[in-house]
Image 1: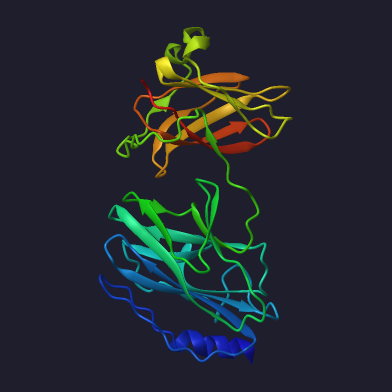
Image 2: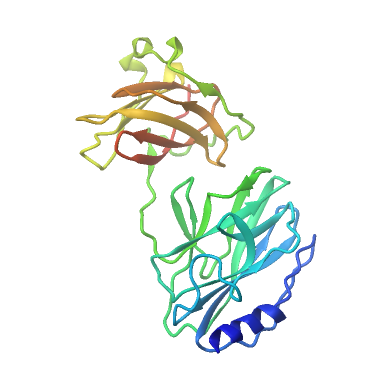
Length: 302
């Protein structure tokens, strides 16, 4: 009966996505189904309504369920969808609400600019819940329960970065390598990816202690991660301790563009030369045991 109810709900739910158009749906729902409605506004002002439905008796799953999930009939170049088994959906039906679960978005952009996700309604929840947008690149959780989430994005597709979450399971860490927090230097957001190997330009022999800032240390003592910024060379010096080794490092700017990659390091320390001036960086440092995401704020270069 409940499956038929949700199937009827999906049948009468008309989702339209077009430039400069925002749509709503009038849905009569069974109290056994809890619903979260979201609205997405793309950089070109196009709008998409999404629905996430929880079945209290676990009639639906996190996978594809006939009668519970509604596919995107006509994919658009500027859109936000649920991703289920690599396919795009506008409605996702899942099992009973679990605040430890996260559900993946597919965000598609042919224009750069600001994108916004907001919660438009919660239906049939007996208790108060928290709702976040999880950014897997920045490792941040942003509450969207009372305030819309806005992010500036480049023109590309994001199919493994954004999730809806209900539990802030990790604390975001931002490290400042200097006390100069009032620097107004802006990021160079047009930096392109630069594949890098272990070349002489990243040699530890080129560093000078008088050119380094104070190092930042990871709170995970068994890893012993340290990061130093070498002002004179515009270079990052990264090291680990104990039995750990660094496998690879990817450097992003604060909008998610890759600035530098260094693969097959397999050493306890490495240097990364930064070709352009970016104040705020996100580092994905992969070791032989784990991947650490660190945000750092560089000092102003004199």
